[in-house]
Length: 354
Figure (cartoon, rainbow, N blue to C red):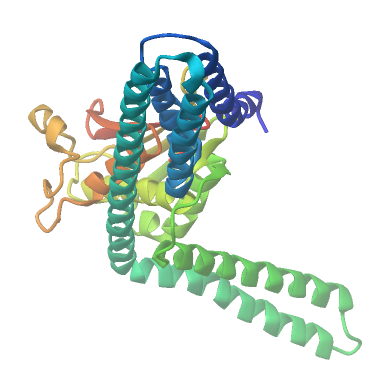
């Protein structure tokens, strides 16, 4: 694991320690200090920290724990003679902690619901896209299967020879296994894209996702007579996110580029997919085409839902892509390409949790 990613994970693991230390400090200060302010109200900071490393039930438990510490501190200082002030402070603190806990849980629940809705919308987009690519995917699967049949027949012929040619038969069998594995990999990719599963947070190499996506629609690229060039940097850092969702973004951008080039007959059709380090803080992915291009007036609306420049488009592909990228802590934008075409780019931060 790269040092930057390790530091990000270390910072995340320190949050519980900071929260516990802060809660202990507030409890001690509230117990031994004779201050006419609601010191335990600072427990709200502990609750807000808990939101970063706890689920909903955990945040509620932290809130209850902070309330219990407030009451305990009030009991320990009840003999100080300032019971009135202590009662007022305790009441204010309990209200502040309870309100903060409720609002934090409510906000997290709304965020979870929005994220679930976004994930379901992304799933619908993937299934729709794969439906449009049925012929291309069938061709991609058929190629290795046909090669496997040829190599299997060759293996049988070499074995049936007099005497059997075991070296040639072995080589044919190796090629057969390789072809079968390739077909299996394509089917696994399609199955992953069609499944509606909860988003995963894995450490990912973006170059692998780009190459897997290109393999999936290679026949579509050849059918459109597009010249493909990949410029993938070797030093890009790992990113944390959902592999299927990020593959969906790259797939959407490539398909948009192919369609833009299909609608124009001017000049060669060139598609460039690149990855590079972004200021040592993340990864920048770019999809550059030589298609119809973009009108400057439409750049701000490209990623809006239901806005499309295609005659039969729904206007959801780029909107879903923006939603996925932003959920991963990144951003996506488009610029005109010179002398023609468009460049779609997005940045993913290093080690950000979606």
